[in-house]
Image 1: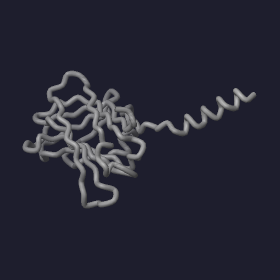
Image 2: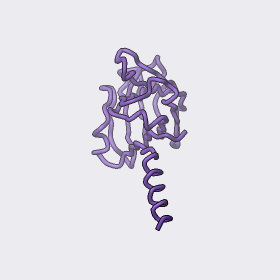
Image 3: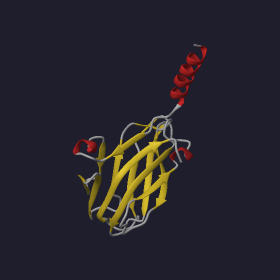
Image 4: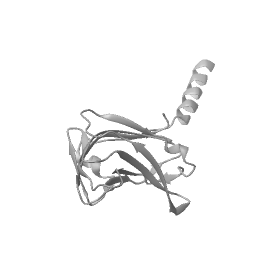
Length: 162
């Protein structure tokens, strides 16, 4: 009996310390609901992916989502295929929860002309401001060219795993 109680306590305590991933896949239209996008982006769900079509009117097309628990998710993994005219950087940014005038950026180089999906990992927890409830923004840019083409996103995961 003591052994069973010990295992039960260990299971309950162990389970309480595990962090829950905030994962986003794109299997149907309702998966778009929590996401917002720039006016230069037309989003659609196709074959299990979020297709972002850029219309060439902006150098920083983006998508964003509200209410990510940054205390539980120090890493962001985005699996995508980049088929745009110029995007070579994913600029991950968010506003400091304690100072809404301070915009924090993490720049990640990405490839272009992809024929397969690639996963990029962002260590958001490397920034001291990544805490509490945040609204992250994913900008697809080369910082100079108005973007046309598509970014195909298969999955976005916020978790504690590098």
